[in-house]
Image (cartoon, rainbow, N blue to C red; front, top):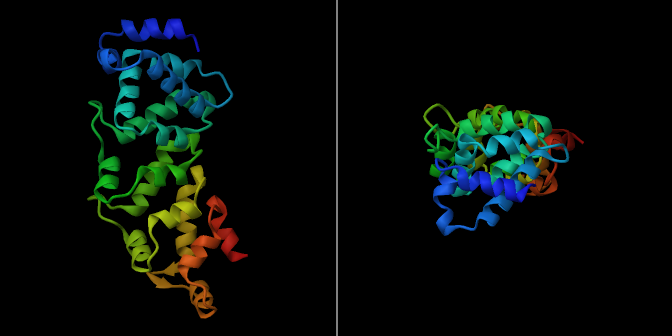
Length: 229
């Protein structure tokens, strides 16, 4: 990180929200946060493209939005290891979560309205990388309809006492395979909202869904396969 150059860029960027707020913040602290974000997203490869973009007016304003909304750590978790495609992946995920004025889109608003912590989502999507936008959107579309109402997937799970905390624990790190992993696990458990033979058999043996969730903790994309075993 070229600290002097980055400070000069940040201070000279009169149009960015970051530069306008520097009177109440530490420049060094902000730059450190940006650098941590870049390294988490890019990984071990060179971060020139993403760094250069985040030092433009547009890029700095976008970083300021995710900083102010306290979602940068969740986003870096989802984008983790993106590598050379970091710039495009970052812009894609940002544009999904915020509009061009920095306001939250339905994807974040719905989660907040339903009291779903973004950290739960980022835990599941951790490492989605270059497929971050499509994976986030795909999982969201499984869970919510066009009006932001919960679909059969979440309603059925809630009826059976399984919350998203349990699901995120099971699917932790599923990354780009999150949608398929969730769909596969749900289809293994339920058929048109009714318990399948797998759940019925386990329940006869005194193993309920809460216990199954605990057993599968951290299975990620292999949750479906592990339960079959």
